[in-house]
Image 1 (cartoon, one colour):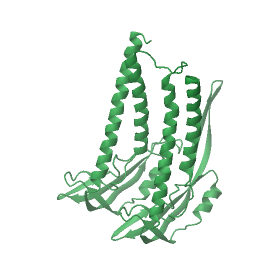
Image 2 (cartoon, rainbow, N blue to C red; image 1 turned 180 degrees about the vertical axis):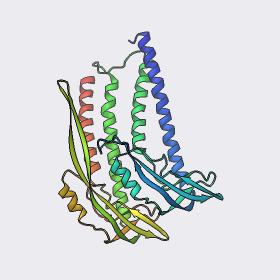
Image 3 (cartoon, rainbow, N blue to C red; image 1 turned 30 degrees about the vertical axis):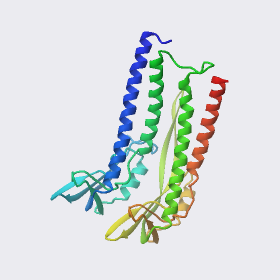
Length: 335
């Protein structure tokens, strides 16, 4: 049984988590509604005026989410010349240096782009109306806070911590359930990617030209902290291919960065990345498969299955870890 002070703090915590859960759920619904509305916005021509990556001078590791892509564009709407930096619904996110550079690489300064403008409010504009930043992360946090809010609310209403038959607190069951939900997300990502790969085989094609194909190095700082020893750091090197190819659809020029739907290959050996980069060289002509509804989305090898099993492997790990943990809790709690 919770004493009065413990019950008060439990009720306060329950109220805060319920509020946070409500705000996150509202943000998800609002984001989804804005994405659907943006599909019917007016489309005008714009030009990229700024394209760079902001990164702190104290940057120590390329594994840190401390870089922000800055992309600004100018366009005309409603008789006004306007400027915006909105790319997706939700705005640009803080990410790693490499991913930020990959996004800015798609929008070089001087490039002419399609700008989707809200006809009711011309100052609201997007470059990619069908996408949003951090949706998966927001969904995951919403689910987590939903579990926490439900648990704390139940404790507050009961006036004591809820236990299983054999004394295992019920909130302990939330962790394996969250892991299993993560596995479901991995399966959904795999299905989405495979559907996209299948559809892209039927996409129209355009002639393209490779403008860049380099091996980039990431320096990752790993710190180890022991009670009896001072903190030490170890630098690890990772390598991946930075690919850019230019293509034209109608009267618009685009820059593509994706080879296939398996994601960017990351290797601890420069030789492996160099071998992958050797497939394409600057100036090489390539066939580009582009989405007719979103010409800025394109790949070179839609049939490639390289890296496609990554989400399934993640789902298997989540299923094993979450399933074993949940089974043990059920046996201990109710056996």
